[in-house]
Length: 387
View 1 (cartoon, rainbow, N blue to C red):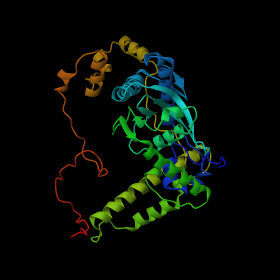
View 2: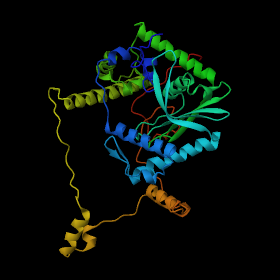
View 3: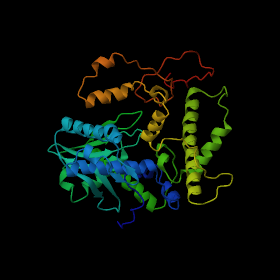
View 4: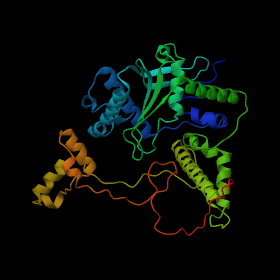
């Protein structure tokens, strides 16, 4: 097959392309975008590579600069060391293994490639490990298309083919130490038969795109699609949700659930429209009715020691210009761990207070809370067809 796929599909885009083949053509002329968060994540990836390949300590990497970001002591404590500890969990669970970092993999019959953060193997397992340093969106290794793409490409890369003997299980790992609401360490173990199914589906999607038999199919994969702001399916969904009255008594629980999912899709689409408009303004293009302005500034001391000295010269009492408060339980736990002290004594003094409730998908592992009162909407479930 000719090499036509370098910009068609990759690790981060394969889930979208496999589900929404029409997004490929729709995205062709959309400008690429980056973010400060992505650049910060890239910097931390480089730090992890230096630690694992050059035998650097996390502390030695403090001050490392890349992509306009500098690794701080806080980064080391909250991201780098936890990531390394989770890496040790992989070794503890599956045994030590030889590995390569930033391993470039490529499918033999497609110009589709990917770079794996850690690709390794021991006698029983092949390992695909991906660092994620984002805080907001939790990413799970379970049924993860990006990791399976890397495994499929790695298996077809001559340099790494011997790591993928079919008697080995394949361990797919996501390590995301900074995630706010989710598991920082997830993994899935699959066999080669399961990987074969994925690769065949992925290559079928590529052939579908090349043959021009594409369709638009919105879903969770739209979140990172460059073309989402101009997708007519998304616009149609927005029109439908705006046309519905959610207090319509004929809407049952199933239909209401569908409308909520539709609203979520539209909300993400609207955010994408705002983001695209912001980027267009940043590129010097006009968006009628909008402009870029500086955010409200927050004043801070350029030299806090010098400011403190002036207060003292003025005979101002220290208690009047300094404030202190007890550190949080999370900060205390990290402090005691760094000092090799037990946290048990303080843990008895902690109470967990919920800030309220939030709506989430029914598959969320947390228990549902008991409603405080009856709903103002009467939303019966559809009758069971089995009777």
